View (cartoon, rainbow, N blue to C red):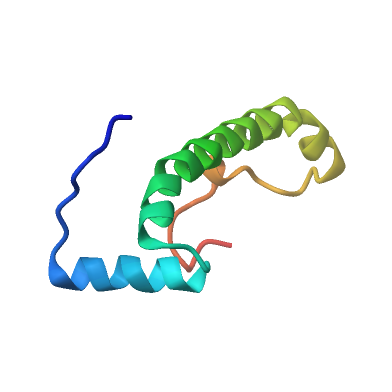
Length: 79
């Protein structure tokens, strides 16, 4: 089975160990699961963005006074 050696600084490794412990996983299992979790996160974000775009007109119809973020002025003083 293929394997991979990954180099971390001491501080990074401590953070990864703490994250693994917080999830109740071994360091090896935690590092193994990270790219799989990231792939699922990206799939979710893509789906959520496409769902939002597909339902944009419904939102615009339901909330006609809301201005899409791209049409808003920048800054805290914009009303």
